[in-house]
Image (cartoon, rainbow, N blue to C red; front, side, top):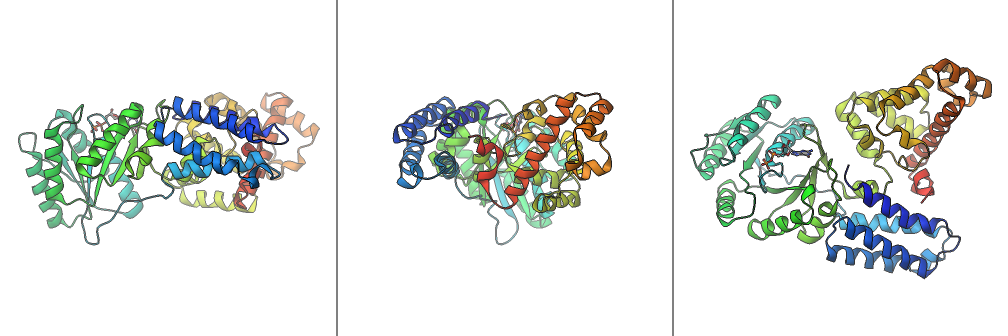
Length: 444
Ligand code: GDP
């Protein structure tokens, strides 16, 4: 997953303050030096790093922070706020046309993930607004692109307009637009060609398509794995075409994260979506605050809940949210969540969305080993229903019984119960909006 080492480094830098009783200006400077290095190593644009560290330093050295009772937590809050600002502050959705169709043009280099994103976006629009999109296959240079789009269209039951590879993309778009008007499609998604590098001919062609389609959105699709190159590409496309938003793909990969952190500040164009895998559902709406929270290792519970809502039973997800609010989350819910999460894809990525998960002791065992999850499940299954509903009943003799019954040691049973109680506490605090009480933040 992206940002892994950045998260570690930032947590280390801020964690050192936590261990100090009193935080001095020199401590803040030292922390800022480490944060600066961490960002540079993550391949964040130099200007962006400078601006960011300047803003954090100014605020952190302010009297109210150093004199406060919990300077370390105040500083985490400032870093979080400034990071959110760097990522764009507001969530910016698709700009809709007052009258149908809303036209969205995908642009970007070859291999960035345009065609895949066109499919994901169609799926997203269908799921969230019951949209009736038409996709136009305008990438006539990459031989497989048209077929790829058609396959996606079939999977989604979305019509794909194509004229093969012998007709100019400009003409294809002209006719595709006419069809969309005739069929009253509410969205038109135009897949365009990319090159390995930016070239003039491509830009000319894209400008002509823009002229004809009059898109509401020109979304630039960039590959997070290409780091600063993605930022340069974004700058060029923006200058020549005027992009309205950015889609960062392959954030599921092992990228250091520099592109995601720099692109908004450098181009001014908002990041609108991120791609987190090859499947049609591997798309996330980009929320700067949630992304910041994730980068700082504070988790992203909202996205997790939304994912649960999308991938699973909506009623169940609502119940979970209510239980979190009312603090009635018990071991039965815990086990149900384990089962759901297990079937939701890469476990470690999901778990990191839970605040504090990366820091809670023992939770790292949760990460990738399905056997470990199975063991935890076995422990819960060895509890009586009364115990699951009321973990307070779990006295030493009951714990011994559960350990024996599930084939685990008492230490493991104790650990699971402790983790459970910590999560319970965290959920309750979170639902009260008290970020400082989140276990992970505590340890910073
Ligand atoms: P295009 O040339 O810009 O249309 O790129 P494609 O849509 O064909 O994507 C290029 C490759 O990247 C394909 O193998 C996709 O499956 C893959 N891809 C696209 N988006 C993502 C993503 O978010 N994560 C991962 N891991 N792979 C992706």
